[in-house]
Amino acid sequence: MPPVALTIAGSDPSGGAGIQADLKTFHQFGVYGEAVITLLTVQNSVRVSRCEVVAAELVAEQLEAVLEDIPPVAVKTGALGSADVVRLVARAAVQFGFALVVDPVISSTHGLALLDETGVRALREELLPVAALVTPNIPEACALAGTADVREAARRLRQLGARAVLIKGGHSSGDATDVLFDGAEWREFSAPRLETAHTHGTGCAYSAAITAGLACGLPPGEAVARAKRFIHEAIRTSPALGRGRGPLNYHVGVA
Image (cartoon, rainbow, N blue to C red; front, side, top):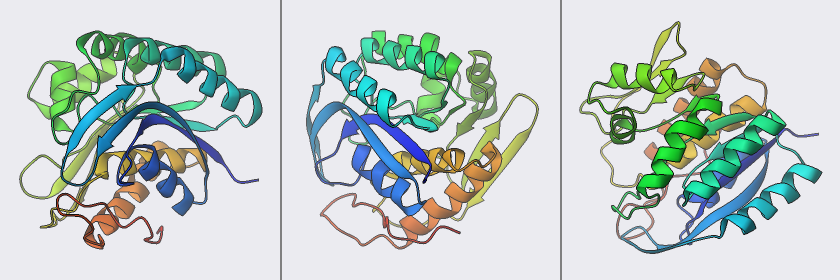
């Protein structure tokens, strides 16, 4: 039987990000992917113009249906849309004990808010404490931790309860260097910065690749290292689709 992973996130009709990116990534890693949809967006490589949040009751029913029949080994979250959804995911993580990777999506790449202040507070106070790994980019980490210092942000986020924190360095200058902190050890994962605009879905795919690694039984550090290689190659070989920030190449091999 293949390992099973679940994504709880929003839908991108252009296929570059959200659950579409997650499921493509799971497939590349030989993992059976399931998806619970939290919100619907109107977006493409140029714009995000609308977001409709799915009622928490419907999200809960989707999640219940998955967990009672084909329970996942690892779960990742993306855009959750509301505080109620954040809370129900946190409760499920405690009850079912799966490895939870939290990608704390607060707004879209184009700036549309995907979680309000109440939701952000619930994420910080209720979801991060039950996460095996939280994977913010630098702006998300600084907003959640209340500091502009990357390592201090990692320390503060781990103090909230997450077992490990990976701060993605795509927004920094120079090489894209990600910092992983598990409370005892610091590790860095670096790749040369690629001069391309086609990076739509990078955060989603990276966290999905890590989740796939955990579902396959890899330790967190190995899962991150393999995901980093995958995401760098997926950006480097992007098919250059769309008129704006196009999607990654989700057909690269997994080394």
